Image 1 (tube, rainbow, N blue to C red):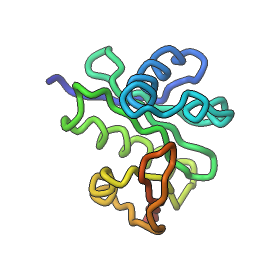
Image 2 (image 1 turned 30 degrees about the horizontal axis):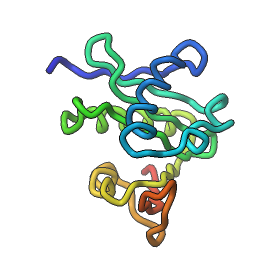
Image 3 (image 1 turned 90 degrees about the horizontal axis):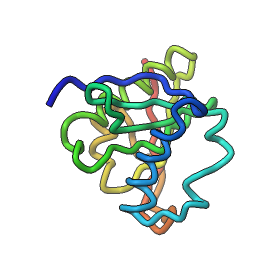
Image 4 (image 1 turned 120 degrees about the horizontal axis):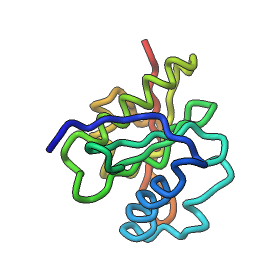
Length: 141
């Protein structure tokens, strides 16, 4: 595998890549209804794309209040630290914007991944789009 890199993405310019990745992960794999995947917050969110060379393989978004969401990596690239690179880029951007607290709604199976990046579970388990989730928070030092 070549080196993974992450860059800020533009919702308009990079829309096809952002949608392709999220549709593959959330709608096709996890059966999230399209009407739950796409929301009005996408237009104002800060988006990120992870690449292997010049091929987009992952995405995430950051909302103005510090919420991180839509973290997704294409199946063939999971386990290769793409999620780590994505989240580190999102956290760095949040801190650059003065967001000292980052929050996310994590699928329960992914909580160890987020805990390694400094997030802590702050809620009980609940269903979102039929998938068990917990709320997690990270405080910048």
